[in-house]
Length: 359
Image (cartoon, rainbow, N blue to C red):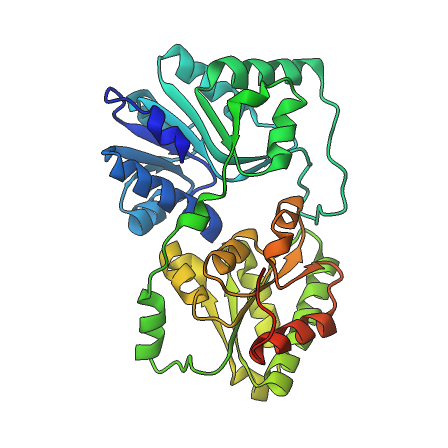
């Protein structure tokens, strides 16, 4: 990533801030790659602002402080020389902390980097966004703050998609200052630890393995519809295509949905289905597991990134515009609120018969 080349020897302690410690595999993958790159540059004094500092310390082996305006965060902020805002999707408009912290950091003489962030011109209300139109009008005050922040306060800005770039441009940010970079999760190297552990515990991974990764929304009817459709799909995959299925949650928010889907399966089907809470493992281990799957059916963005980077065919259950940008890399693309099981089955059958793969 180009932003590392701007670091100088005077820069010592790095404070990383993002959607970390929220038990979300995608954001932990981004954090893992950034920590690794910082370490390779010789920056070992890293503090991560985290919702769950103990989890962050256990998974990543770095110092962590509580996120938000807490005493431990303020102590880490004052101690740091570099502030990095990384990953996550900031919908609609940045928060007071998001906006104010860089100004304070600049006043204190710190370096400020925005790395592979998603700055989405959509208001997130826990519902699919793929059919929504972007916000195009902002108040004069908001536009002015963003203009000053990204043109004069922040030292480096990289975003992970065109939508984020347009979001900044329509608010007056100089296009030359905005770099588009691929999501850091693409660069994460997989580990065989989880796969080896499963094999040691008698889990047979020789049959075709299909990994299903759902997503929970703030709409009970949509969750019910998604659950019912996935139950039907899983039953067909096992009975008609003789596969094994792994139900995996990429976020703690999806544990309930995974349990609901699994519970709804008949007993004879459950014999070929097992569940994994991916948030309990390092993202490297999760990516290593994805690499041994025949197909991934994912409603989580980073589950699809993992599959693509491991050359595993994937079916995207799309809920957000950011998922659309990878459309030519998917085996198939279906709206999460109205996906067609038969079309998904047809695509997976082609893969199992040695036909179609990812583009």
